[in-house]
Amino acid sequence: MKGSVKCAREVRAAGIFARDIAALLTIAVVFIASSCRTAVEAEPQNTTIAQQSPAPSSGPVANYQQPTSSFPNLQSEITDDRFKTANSEIGTFDFRNFTYPLPRGWQHPEAKDISLENGRVKPVAVNVSEDMSDEMHAEARAARRIGMSYVTTRFMDLTGDGKDEAVVILKVETTGNAIPQLVYVYEWKEGKPELIWNFRTGDRADGGLKDIRPENGLVTVELYGQDRFVLGEVETSKITGDEEQLCCPTFFTRTNYKWNGKSFPIQGKRLTYEVANPAAKPLENWGDIMNDPIKSKKYLKSEKVKE
Image 1: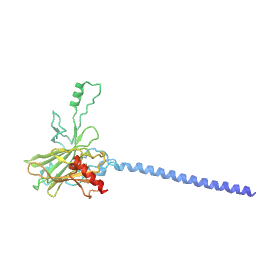
Image 2 (image 1 turned 90 degrees about the horizontal axis):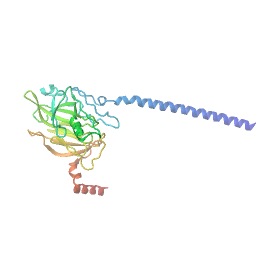
Image 3 (image 1 turned 45 degrees about the horizontal axis):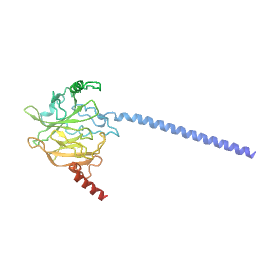
Image 4 (image 1 turned 135 degrees about the vertical axis):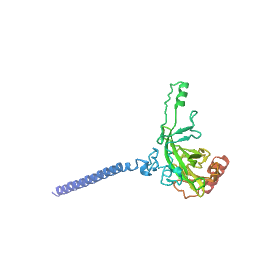
């Protein structure tokens, strides 16, 4: 009898235990389902750059890779609300329908400029295949054309005369994922814009444009990458040891320029900062060290000693 009672108690306890396990499993399933639904519903909040950073009033921002927690919005500074108005007639000019000269590296033998219509020129892509003859290959490549899209226009005094110049930023359309950009600086002269400086920048972490602004009587240009700066009309190439994912730069370089009446030569040192910690001490003229075998070896040796 005692054995029967003991057995009954064990069965009842097992039943209660089983019910508890079932209840816990039910709660876990509901929690997981709720978490999944929340994650799916949260994704549309980061579907466009316009939601991350409002598009400028002068026109829509070009289609860049959508910023997420993994892909930051590298265009946030050049498309923010600074420098949206001008103190001269140049602020009324329509730069979305205008002809721009192409810098070195983007020119075509038959066309050294490009004309935007409503802020865009579509690229011309021509496919090539291995079974084509050399002549057909050459003809196909010659038929290709880059496209261009308008990004924004910023108005700021870059010459020190008290009048705003227009800084027009365009994106090169290559039919791929690259985001190289072109910058054009115009002053207002005799009732029309006159070009006084233009330069190209690289692709995201590879020398892409971070910002351009007036600062303490100088023109500050910031490019992503280590010791990346503009020299004349082109951006400099990667220095030794600068290896990063295109999407996610960890360094940027700040370089100052000053108008001398004819051009914008570099002023002072080129400073490389950490993106995550811009308040930290920058590296000065970093490429001069890393691109020199003797200097870089000496520097690396001194760093090893510090450790």
